[in-house]
Length: 402
Length: 162
Image 1 (cartoon, each protein chain N blue to C red):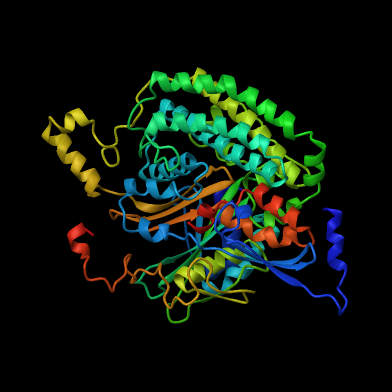
Image 2: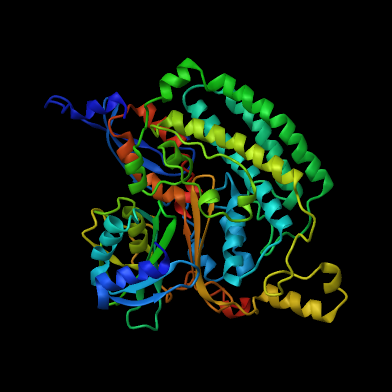
């Protein structure tokens, strides 16, 4: 833990007064809509209280009134920095409920998309840490590459930020050769940019002074607070859902899980940097070994029939109507399925009573769970360190509030 | 420890407290009476190294006598096993003991469950609404509350196939 924590032992004498500082809800440094009410002793944070829910959109309630395929679009809006992971995570959960087994081609396509999304998520988080410590240049370097990732998403599904990528049981169309070319071009260019960004920031004396030993948390506290993802790995616990409970054929790929030691801002930064390198490795391997085969599974309950058949065949038209109107046989049961999101274990708990909508759908949002450790982490820190800690935890308002 | 062993250990230790054990999706699902949630979670944490509270959420079955439920997901990271605990309380007396003393992570998750289902976690340090506005006087995730504002007359759900 940082030495700054010793400040908290200094009780102010009667002549000194604490001041209250409202950080948020629309403060540029929060990078989202949530409020921190900080009790300050000069520049030192004594205590803080969080208010969240400013962009609560009742997704769990809405989901209980929508048929299965209409819910994917709600999941976009949770962690909007890496919405394809949310989409595919939800699709995997529903497929688990329906007992659908996807083909290797679907799995590999999903892995490529999810890892691109992870890069986009980590890029923005890491460059924002640099921005909040005063280094704006790196941010502009990485924005260009994030733009390329969004162009790839646009090619695949037509949208950039709120993607609604893929369908239950696969994809609506195959990867276009032009898209594959774009991904290959990205894989050539991106490592150069990332190396440049690291050169600029990673061993920079000012950046290291600002981040090492700041906002640290021990592995025990991190586990108690329900940390997952890069923030937990920075504290030294090698838990990654991709390895612990492989989904979507992640067991086929060779990659390492980076871990830190102190769980501070610098460790989180380094863990995310290494994960991006690993993601590049995974995408390259998935693209080289991309198997042939269908890009959707023919499960009539959830997959729409091909359009040319809908316009020409009565059975296909009926099938199409049944899927769209939600008049299909849904299994009764419950399922918990999780994926490794940008911020950690993104879980989907589904209870189905056989109806056209989920009886209950709960999102385990990693951000919501670990953000409650923030007051403990920043107690005794300087205000500027509190800001940089928040950006290093990658708190996304959409994911906080659901 | 596999699921059969885990079930046996829990049944041996807790006996009649455990009302039902199922395995719907590869996760052992234990339904237990609401007064023994703390000892069972404590036992899982201390003796069986389920040291990680993955998730906590509520559920509402309006037709049941014990209408409100809370579902806990716990995880043993060493052996990579998960367990799901379910407990139900009545709508008239929806109170459960809090897990915040065992897992600090339960704090906000319980607040969220209180916010949406009105389940009162006794002993919780700060049990107030978290995502909804504080002056809200109902619990929106309960099944009797419609999705849209019930005071609106210009939209009839029947016309939208709902």
